[in-house]
Image (cartoon, rainbow, N blue to C red; front, side, top):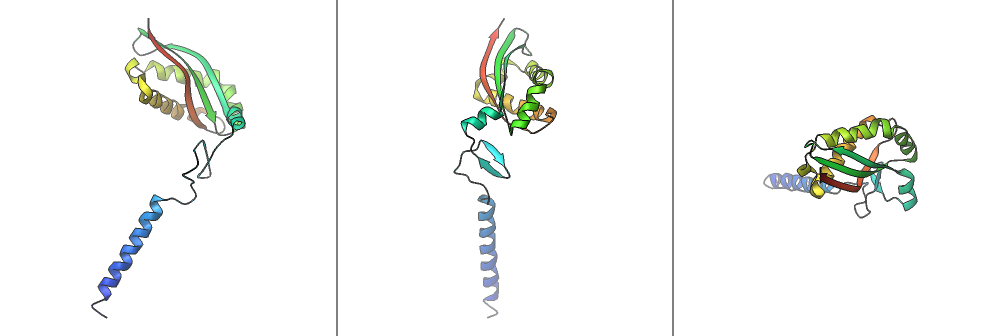
Length: 153
């Protein structure tokens, strides 16, 4: 029995570590098969078309120079918020707080930084982080670029 004791402890530790690794890889409470549109309480909830329209606000016709003054960007953005109340408060401050943040962020960008899907994703992520800080209620779930042109003057 004394010779089997170290083997028994090793086996129990191995099983415990495997179970712990499996638990960390597959987190309970998340449905990975369902698409992720809105996260509520750790579980992703797929939104209907009506819910998307109710929680999405659009800022159109943003035109500004980039960090290279010989380039101009023209774009439209769609902002999806986490609820209807957040959308209402977003709409109230969009012209006075949100649009200046977008213009300042674009003023620091070079045309090469905005090229391709990766550049646009980075811009959206940066805008999401900055704009989320100034929202009086709720939070931003997603920012999408709906129109985008960079041209030289």
